[in-house]
Length: 381
Image (cartoon, rainbow, N blue to C red; front, top):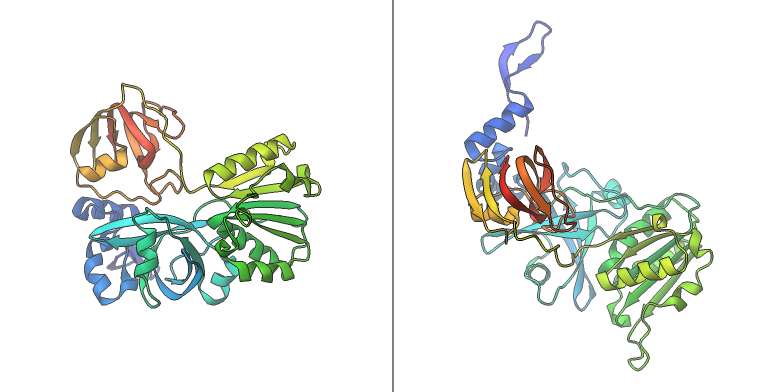
């Protein structure tokens, strides 16, 4: 949204600013409880043109392609203001279901060249059997619909020229690998690359056609798809035997993405094989149990900008406390990955439930979705 300008013209012929960006955000916060006042009018704007929405970045669903019995790839055309991405990054899909907004993280499954050349990107969604959102997404959306997305986030894992690579992926964990391999093909890289892709059965392979195309485009790609239950009597799960055939294993950059159990097992195997920790990176979209918080957890939480105070028992994270108080703070993955819920803490101590680390007493930025208070806390929200 453009900043308003005054009618007064400066001596050099330019218009002076009536409000700076910080002032405009302050007014929006005071009047509408939003940093961007245009978000207040989203319900009206969306009925006129969904691409005018401000609380998220709109993206039109151009096509939907079935990958397996429980996964589909969506081709999206984001609004021009989106900004693009780097290979291996992620975004959040933001949807309204039953009057409540939900946000879920997904990897982009194409190379950045798709966005650069024709303004589209792909996101592959695998149904979570007992999930609230992924089944609804796969059943509800059709080509032509508009969905909300976040800006891309996460590290850029695109290999450098000449770096030998090992990718270990499981199930839908192949999606960021597809993005990285396609980016390598676009750059005509000839790195030695081995991909170990583990699926339950051959019918569960995601991106099978793209993988075969990439195998033709990348002459040094060693593609190994392992159907773990092809022979139910002799299941073929990841083990030392799969790594023994990888030449120069300890010199490879290793990238892991898949279920937590597979990734932990892969890290242990790589460590046992002598691969240094600094050569191993991973992407994880689910988190294990939070660190047990001490009995001192809980306390008075004051949201200073809204002038609302609540008493926390320590059994809910700060994001949940804010929502229960009627506030609508920005959030993304709700798992501590995307940092969209970052908020300024003015005072007090909070504990990060992923690491168990306590904050300082003074001002600093904390993640609402993974933090609980220990004693009185003031948040600039």
